[in-house]
Length: 164
Image (cartoon, rainbow, N blue to C red; front, side, top):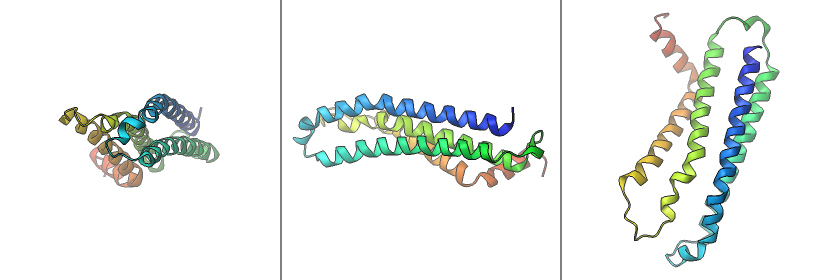
């Protein structure tokens, strides 16, 4: 099995995993919709809930679609001469996949971590409520950084291995 095929399988599994988490978040979204009347008394608009809920679903489903397209793109770029060597392009691809994993896990858990915002104001807010979403936003940033500057990370890892 070629590296491209293994990568495509991993990307497909990652997209299936994200789709499952998007579907698992639907009950919490339905509970939010059911409790809108309670929150309207506090001045929170129904439009904002609908915008937040639809953006969560749209971002999740768009991510699943883009990951599937990336898997198909990897399969279409089969390269016969790179079967046995780990080139710099392959290292960049693996770093981008790691970044994609960080982004997908952050997107999967972020809606649940922000549910404390919908609770009554009477509930005392602790640091735990804010640190977990902050950690997920940090993870999202690291994932975007790995995807955006994979050549920097490949060169840095190359230097750290003593091959510079």
